Image 1 (tube, each protein chain N blue to C red):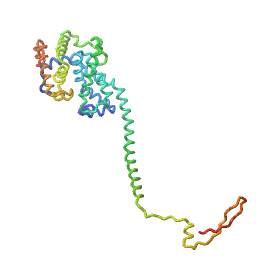
Image 2: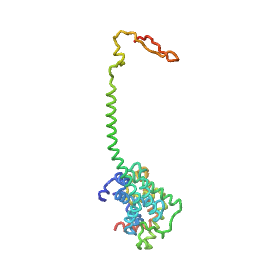
Image 3: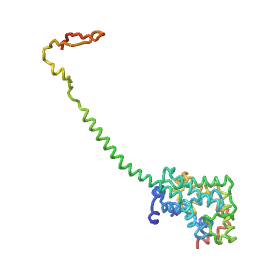
Image 4: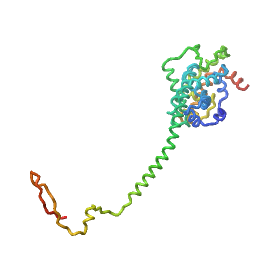
Length: 123
Length: 192
């Protein structure tokens, strides 16, 4: 409690306290304000409930998503390790590799009437 | 439950009220309704207006509670709202007649207030207070009536502690001078 109060002044100012002439004034004051605030308090409770649900989802989702992202990143980085270059060969190249190139006949349509011309082609 | 809530700090209570806890709001109202009334009375000078301003301010504070960025400074924030609401009330000249007391907090039964002597004393006090600057009225009411300390007033009204002491000194001096005739009787009462 404040020990520097001027009790003479205090006793005079106390006459301005509505409770002094109207017993129960402050209790009624408090009840009136709390009753008047009921709709706003109810709105806050509803908002709090919704936000708590969102927050609980958030609490679950964020760590899960972070873990998944970390795992995916790890896998991606791991797959990007350098591998020796690969030379791709066609099957026909593999089959013909090392075989002396024979002269093979080939057929072409040479004329407007559909005449066929035999030509030599080296493989 | 409420007894435990009374032990909580303003900051903790504000947090609970933000979530819509009615009991926490009740405790916050209980804690600051008297200072809010005192500040409003200093501005309006009339009981009915002070009552309206104080009640409205607490409700406005609840609606704007999310704007209170420093919940530990709730009291100062609330007092600012009270001062502004009370000043607006005076500025708009919506002062009501004394007999149009709202049902909100006024007793419906006759009270000793009807006693002429008491009324005269109260009017004298009101008149004496009204001779003081608004800030001095607030300080003397918060200090000598509500029991707030210099430091608390300084923090909550956001003025230096030395200024609080200075205002309090001049306010008391002016009140003693204005109410000199009433003092012997009051001192007897205070002693009793």
